[in-house]
Length: 128
Image (cartoon, rainbow, N blue to C red; front, side, top):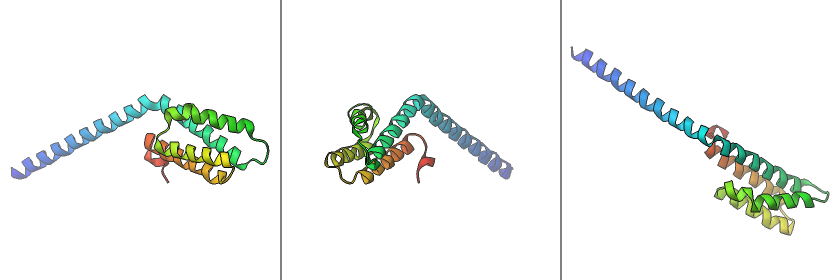
């Protein structure tokens, strides 16, 4: 009799824990789904910032148009979506762009900062 009661109690507890976990995961997924349009735009802008900085850093040709686009991103949409890590990377690249040194390292830092922020925003599976 006591064995049956313990078994029922454990079964109920496992069921309740499973239900709570399911509700938690559902809410988590709904939060991501609700933020998805914003996160997709942020991803696109991060990709453009990384591509622009990389192009400037690795181009031997005149990059005036790319530099202009970097500053447009810097003073525009990136300020709207970036958190501190991307802000710091963009600022460091901007400083180096003015002095024309260490651009490749700073472009890579933007890419890493974007990946880190997007990992936090989207999924920890993006982390390395």
